[in-house]
Image 1: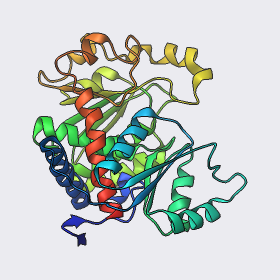
Image 2: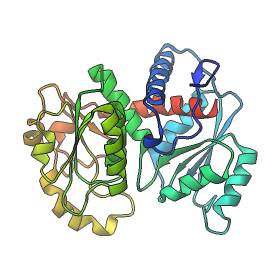
Image 3: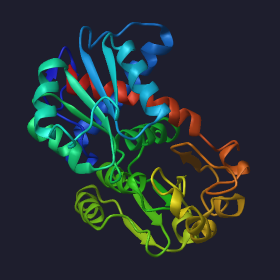
Image 4: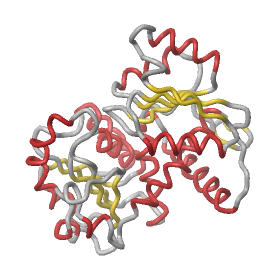
Length: 314
């Protein structure tokens, strides 16, 4: 793997499916180093003088703060661009936007609705693109999740991840991530809310190489049984507000409560990408209990994204 100043280099982060296991391990290795240096007060200006453009057509406090602070800690500058500042595909084409921004800045992190917008920026521009979230995928989140599991469990391969709830972008990228690192994954979703079929197929391809197992079910108990990690996400994502009542009715049997959580291993840990809605997808006794590591998980967004930025923009 190519390195610059001892840091492994990647071209983009569009999807975890695009990464090799070596690249994922390098991300974790650098995340661990940067996290340790951050705690010790050791500067690591790997991106001194570089500028990251942050395009948000979907707002997010956590994503903005973690990338902006991360870029500052790496010695660079983060430029925030909201949907009021830049309108992808409306007015100016994505081709022109990618070409122009490539002349001004050193990398782009984009959080948007359409996966194709991220892919088009990478196709038409000449600078690294980081997928901060789309309706289809959430790779930065899942890399931070897996890093958190590794910190708490000391390994990934052979563990069982249980995801309960909506087959959304988080579930899709979890399938990609677990299949790559050799974690077994069981996903429980209601009928009609399954994970994307293409993502499932890609994950199955990767699972053959890593010897991971993939279980898709409508039964949350089957998914959670003997799991090392239990994960859920909000039932109503941004843009789905009109479906709220129906979604609550459909997903209520998929709530991660004390009873369901007890089906997992005794030393299981609980993950949630936040924001969480207590009393809906998860109860207080679980998310605020001793086996919840959601704030470690949230912190690790910062360290893992710093590693990603250093590897694509270094």
